[in-house]
Length: 400
Image (cartoon, rainbow, N blue to C red):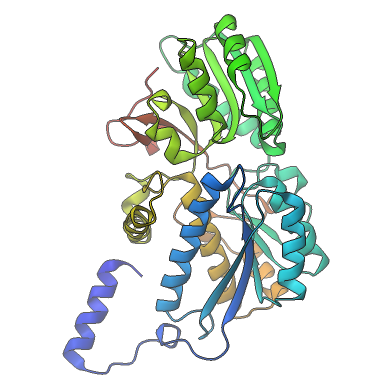
């Protein structure tokens, strides 16, 4: 419900006394609906996963204020997978067999999601997930992505970036690609490498590092020597920040640097992060915030993130993907009027679901729909969409 609708309901209640709300909006009763998941609350992915934890807490709080699900209060059980896919698999087994949760919500990051997907398939459970980066690996029929990459992101996402750069007065002619071997990051970087070649960009450097690496000095030196017009950084969490800091130590600033999945808050807060490019599905500015649902979520997240001391209190791609996943789960339960996983899956496949990032469909390959990715840039300490122009922040344009 929008804030205006809430005020209206309050005013009606004050004027007319004890007016009954719709059944779904009454106080929940009975046994809670238990939703289980894991998140990387510790380990190298924790900087981003903590955002997903806060979003889940906000959504469940608001959901219970709206009457819960099927008239029952919602309880979220979240366990720490420590950024380890193998541990995530074990914990999802526990959630299904020992904790006997009613529904599942996906963890953060591709490796852990793939582990959770295997467990969900074993027990015929719906798995809605928010940050899976390799659609071709999503073989399970009852998994649903909130991360709207489309079925072929290695092509479509890369083309979006190069389309934007080609439209500039001095488009890049050379490219350096440095990337983590983290599965989804590596997959996307290899896709970008192929598209760059097809577009005629000269590759002056290609380097890889093992996930968990913390020594970016040698990589920074190689990038500086290569002198690329465009630096593609296949990073996740704080890796991009560490590489930028290493380049600063040798007095080097890349002309244009694109990041795949940086930790959003730390990147905006770092001076070296200025003008960084990255992918997004939602940012805290019009036209994304034009809907009442999005505006209300932004206000709640801002308040709660500041209280929690998160590095960035604004809503961006990670928070929006997490919120979307919860919207999908709620829509599936309400639409099917059931907690039965097969009925929820059938409803999601047959219907388009309105979310804060747009209307999503799940009738494409691997249950993926359209590629809704946009390109954003750090400008003035904030992420602002710069491409496509129809989604750009007011007055924002790409700045090299």
